[in-house]
Length: 194
Image 1 (cartoon, helix red, strand yellow):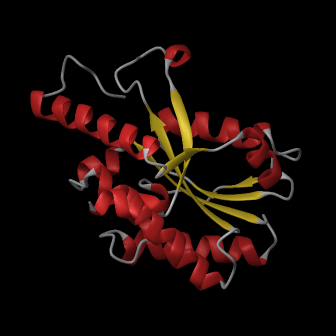
Image 2 (image 1 turned 180 degrees about the vertical axis):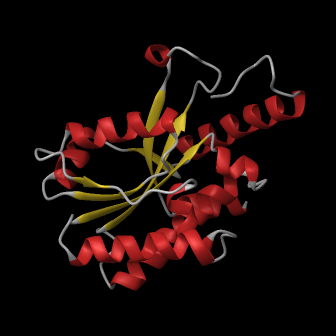
């Protein structure tokens, strides 16, 4: 969790810029909040969710996914960085990305779920560690979605790129946090490129 008292001015400005970019993506339809009905539909036959194990975000994400899954069947092959690691140009692809792909492929073959979620989040400690800007996290998540869809030979409806946003990164009280999960739309590619 971020702390205002130890956050540098440069980091604070970057967070403000990222929040502005996320707002723009929402306004221009690059991000669409996932609806409860859609989550309920996705959860009926299990979900394979590639999610970062960040303790501040994962509980919120999984609580939401399990809420609409009668059997609470969410298979979780997570590593720090989540879905973006499966992008072939991500610096962690050779080890972590391939490991995640192997785990997802195995879970898919074992019938652990009919929907695969490729999820990254913001703010992200792994992205900070790698000096990855927000736009790169989003684009890597979309590319990971495309890559996994091709590897599995499934339709784009099976693999879903999601992005979990903490709109209140400095709020320490979890009850007061404002977090939302969005589908990353292909329109985000054009918005981020422009």
